[in-house]
Image 1 (spheres, rainbow, N blue to C red):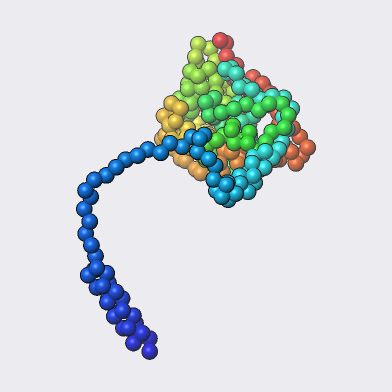
Image 2: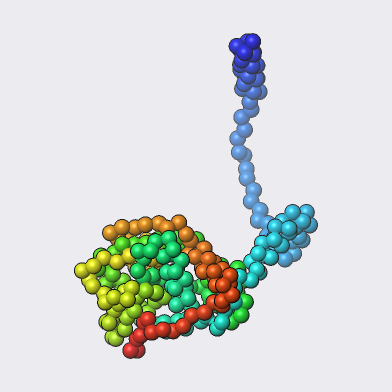
Length: 252
């Protein structure tokens, strides 16, 4: 029964294809016209389309306006070697990263990667997205002492960048009195740096990070780490805060 059904189906299919082939027409382009339709304020809104997407828009807006924590002070980022926003950002990365990889010794971000500041008071989901709008993944890089020295030179050249776990002083664009994880920097040792994939791939002039001794993914986005850090503080009844603790001191 199954064989005869397939045979019949095949015969019908072939007959149909033959009919389609016999009825096929050929067309040729004789002329073409182009007209541009502008879409501006004069174009009326389509109520059917609005009715379709509005519930989703309202739900998303409600989530983006959800308060996730409170700041004790405004987290600003002036053009100084050390900033409140930079310290909060780097400290949050270090704390959350070490939950997944306790061998991490210090973290590095860049001033340009921090896209906003936090005002004093309520902080919403939207503001965390504004701070880190990219889908950057955190990565751990095992670096030789020579490569860490290049990172230090980069930080000194930029007169400071958001860091945690590393401390230094800068004079004439040169770093000195450097410690990492509480110990004096030793160029003969290797170190584990936590950063994010954009920088690890050489972004923001950090070519020295492109060839580490080892690169490990920890499967967490920077933004997720920020949310986790803020959520932990909120659950503990604490506010988001940061201090200028002298981790980078410049003689400028």
